[in-house]
Image (tube, rainbow, N blue to C red; front, side, top):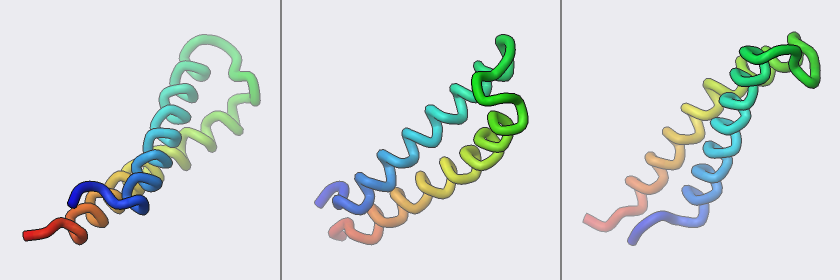
Length: 68
């Protein structure tokens, strides 16, 4: 058995939060952020641990559902 629907959703959310983090870095690095610096930094700070946590949860769910 491969990836479960739950781990697929977790991995998809992980991708979204990673894209948000990269977007925030570009917004902060190249001029004035669209939503302002405090909001953009807040999104960046929230998305980094969320990305790691979602990835970890997806890997753990997949490992738990693998057949030995």
